[in-house]
Length: 296
Ligand code: SF4
Image (tube, rainbow, N blue to C red):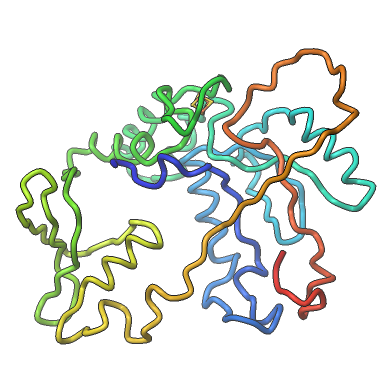
């Protein structure tokens, strides 16, 4: 589907923290990334300004703040979140506003485009028009069915529409990418695809090929791209492509909370998910594997 994973992503837009880039130094497990949080932080700011993210800066260790003026205002917490926030304090658990890629207010189309595309007036104009076409969320509908007013971030609204406006983008829909093709030097030269309506094979050539199909579809394409030079698939000399995949897992439980009994009727509309989250704060305890596991 056009827009892919961004259509049904929950839009929780928290940053990785400095320790997440250096797990070996911190916990003695895994590998340190060759880049640090400080290298990535300016790009986090740019992405957040581009897509529109609400939240607050709480100054929590390893749960980084955004630069001033980047985040949109956070919506009020709901009753259950306020209750958890109040009582979490007693046991040292923070409950703070989440960061979510939904417009709680219109984006600043007057200043953001110049920050994202300095010295490029055409790009600034196209981006400003795109930002003005997005309205603020009215907290009333199911974001996972698509957001008609473009308050929720998805790539179709936020990237493809302005990219089409440049006149430099062609979209081949219903084209199932099959493999990355290589030139005689072993560099990516294009993508072979199957037209899903006709079953016919097609090919697009490119100076560069970007696989941005998520952790599993991108892996499928790499493993599909076998050749005499790369018999295990592309970028897989280690044999690790497609191994050690993980995902964010969720669980839930229900409970009867007497304090909620007899509560007046009130409106709990809001974003398509929680307005609050619990950042990991036992960092001192799990340093050097003191809790028996890394991270939170
Ligand atoms: S609740 Fe979701 S779908 Fe409805 S306007 Fe807000 S972001 Fe869009």
